Length: 219
Image (cartoon, rainbow, N blue to C red; front, top):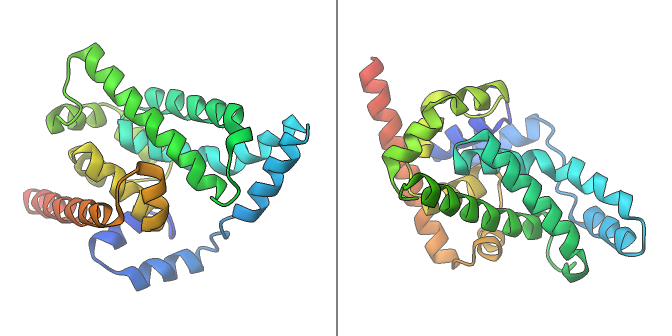
């Protein structure tokens, strides 16, 4: 588990070590969010330089795919959701408000695509989206291995995350993996800040309990 990785940030969130999480990010040399630079690129695209969109894809596609994979528990579905989100973002650029960071705006589109994909998959497979057993099974069948190869969440945490109700998993990922503020999360999800804080707390409580149970079994 490399310093500053998604796994490291998620683990630190579960022990409530906010100061350590900040230190990990600083030590890892994580680049600052390029909200202003993104807005400038959007202006250039709208002025006619459409190829500049590739820069935004390079900056944000990996984070989008990481989030979608953890939300959907399936790499192929995550790739589709990410691709759809990027295409929709490109088409909607004339409606982009530079008062919002591009990342927040893009994640709002991505979250909706993930919700749509989960609902579509549920209908097709005759599953309930909030069925924790179904989500856990989906994650266990190869996708945890894909996450490990990508240097993300370890198998135990990935499975515990998959067992969360979608709204709790969504809130936890946005806060502790994507490191968004509650205000940004509210813009993305449409939920209020208080509701999001409660979802994150419940997600952390349930993940911590699940990891402790797994540790007891292994020990």
